[in-house]
Every structure is written in C-alpha cells, then in structure tokens.
Length: 168
Image 1 (cartoon, one colour):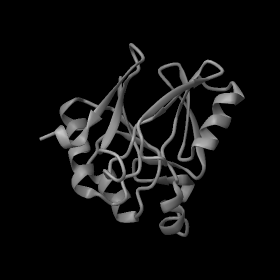
Image 2: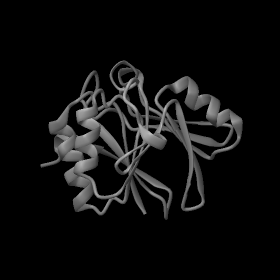
Image 3: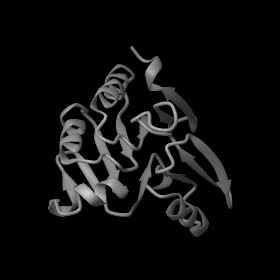
Image 4: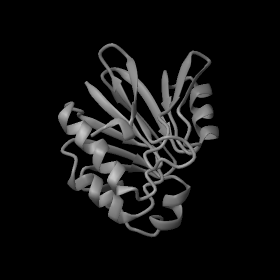
C-alpha cells in the first residue's frame, strides 16, 4: 500500500492540489497529515479532493484556527482527527504521528511503535531512536525549505521524498 505523509500546508491550496493530483495518479490509498492545515477550508479541500482515508493531527496553526470547531467523534468526513498525537496500525506496522518533534521523540522512546512521523520544522529529516525510525516529510507550503512530502510503500518499507515544485 502507498501512503502519503504530508505536513505544514499552511493553506497553500495550489501545492496541496499538486500533492492530491500525485496521489490520484499514483494510487495513494491513505494520507497521514501531520498538522498545520491552518483552516477548516483546507481540511474541506483535502477531504473533497482525496478518495481515501485521512489521518490528521493538530499542529500549532490548527490550534489557533481549528480548536473551537466541533468534530463529532473526532472525525470530519473521511478524516480521523487526533488532537495531539495518533497511534494506529497499518499493514501490521505500528506507527504513530504528531506535529511536534518532542512528542514524536517521546513516542519513539515509548517502545510502542517502530515508525513515527512528525512535522513542524518544515525540514525533511529522518533519524532512529531506540530502533524506532522518525521521519519528517518537510512541508507542503514551501516555507523555509522547498515544498516536499513523503510516500511510504508499506510492502517494502521504503520512503520516497517528493519535491512538489517538480510535479507538473
């Protein structure tokens, strides 16, 4: 299964549109969004333009703009919402995700997961802590660093960093 890992959209709909077109063309089945959508309109756009399941955790920009929105059962359309961190199992992989690196490091140290995704820094990065791999896909917005996201192939456990500005 192919899963897109995205973060820090900051309402950049043109770049998000490129990500979602890539997802449709490449049969991406799920998206894990690591926060900082920044508005309910961006969450709506994501849901209206992606056919698969979406997992989303709040970032600091979401706390400012989405925290007062009522999400029944922590869901919004096709999106499962996690306020601070999420822990799920996909294809027998125990994974966790958060917006902030300090939370991600704590999840790695907990020993409950073998893979943790995080955002916030806008910089693509990977490291291992206690045998747990941490991955930051960069940022969709293209702020501070080039616009990027990651694609995870759960069958071979490989990751690919996609540069959004190189997509047509």
